[in-house]
Image (cartoon, rainbow, N blue to C red):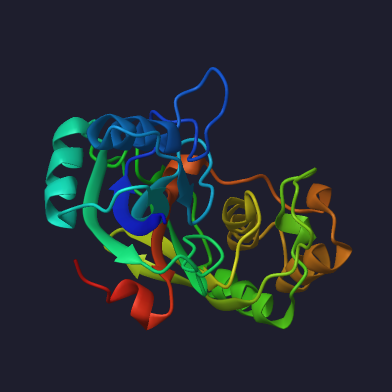
Length: 253
């Protein structure tokens, strides 16, 4: 009988080639698996809630893993992992879940924030996109509201991915002013590869006055990635929340 656990963590994605293991590149998944396998003295494979791209960050991330022997103390494992892992990955919690609980497929929604700074800030070089041109935020929000009318977001998806459908249900999409900068908040049941950055890049075209709200809608309806704007840089993007059925998150150890 195997024992399944959820692990909550956060990471700065600057020096990683995304979440997923890949040849000849350091990933967050590989780093976590090596740490767990070393500490628990058995080969551990982890499954993440999703795949963040190269340079993308996560202030809230969930993964699951299975063990042959139960963990005596989740608190002790968290402490040991944080001592073992590099400074740009931090673990917050570890708790047991049922064998049916799945970090990716059990998630009911995910929320991303995209940060833009309008001033030169040496402390946000890795965590916000510096953008100094004037933007019509009201128009950007008007365009963002139209996202609720659609489900097929092929125009904002990376090409040649292995997903079966490009349909997503968006629950929230809005720009907010935060200090001297902006943050785009978007929540959906699922996201396509590169989707948030493509949406942000296209909404910036609206903000600059180069694209109308109607033109933004036409891009969605074309279902053509080539019609949309360039993707915004990865370093401004954060995965900030993942929702699960309450019983999975409130389990204690």
